[in-house]
Image (cartoon, rainbow, N blue to C red; front, side):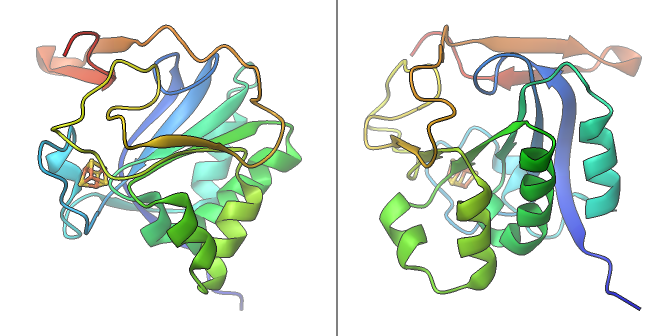
Length: 187
Ligand code: SF4
């Protein structure tokens, strides 16, 4: 029997306009070893939290959103779960949807990484927002939080696409809990 690929997720949003171009889904993986000072999602750094789900379930959730144009992977660090996420990314691309990845690694380091999952995920992505967050170099870009980070277009899909405006979204969940998505709109 084939092994079922699993993902450890921190959060999932089926529809958002605050995580990349247009209406899209977003998922946040659990776990990041980079530990940037001032990280926006410190609760997603530990590898012990999150919830486990299968790649099959994630793909089904994403494909249940017919009017979204793509998906964004964030975290946590997506490239620590690259092999499983590459299966999700390939399924999205086959469905005609775009793939944007927020990563704390520099694009050059990812390209030089010999891990097959990392290379497969790079090959299935359209756009990277790449580089560690630097609290001392803040900026108000729609997708980048500090000036050392860069957008890396891996395909032509998002070249020339409207990326802004920079947005924050707030949701009120059951019990009145408020959750935020996106980027702060002031420094
Ligand atoms: S790479 Fe992202 S998730 Fe990881 S510590 Fe830095 S800001 Fe936080």
